[in-house]
Length: 233
Image 1 (cartoon, rainbow, N blue to C red):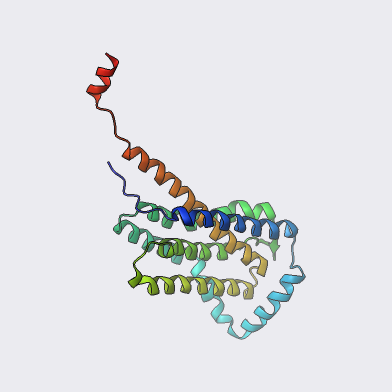
Image 2: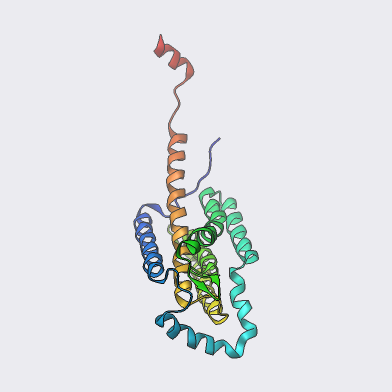
């Protein structure tokens, strides 16, 4: 049975940029995480950035849970499911796989591995990288890969760009919200965005590789059994 993978998620030109961006995300997490490893408080940079954010939202405390809400389970599942269904309707299995895997893989990597590896805490809770920033940035990066990587119809370009831009703004708002709620330091959110984005890029590269391998196997003609037997004789 033929599997309809659809066009590659990144394609040949995008693959090069994908590897470079993935390497950049890894560098950001490591470069921030190593100096902060084991810390239980902000460094001077975090203190300088966090203080005005906390002061700005002091009068809007009721708004803060709503800023953090897009990074919770229900919105993440809804966005992933909608993207996956759209890809399946378009007969694009590779896109559906990315949509389903992006957020859970990114959050699992963050919560189960990286937070314990760097063990930076905020009020006794593991904080680096931010799981909230990881979740919402994985949603934004997943949509960017699915909606912005060419080729695409020009008539829908403005809508696609606008949707991805909205999710980028939501990512920034979520980062500000968790800082103001005193759940994370600024550097936690930066690392979280790098983890979410890097995970999506890594998954896209792996799915493209897998789809290319399976497509080549499907397109390789099989030798008829009779011809095989004749060859043996």
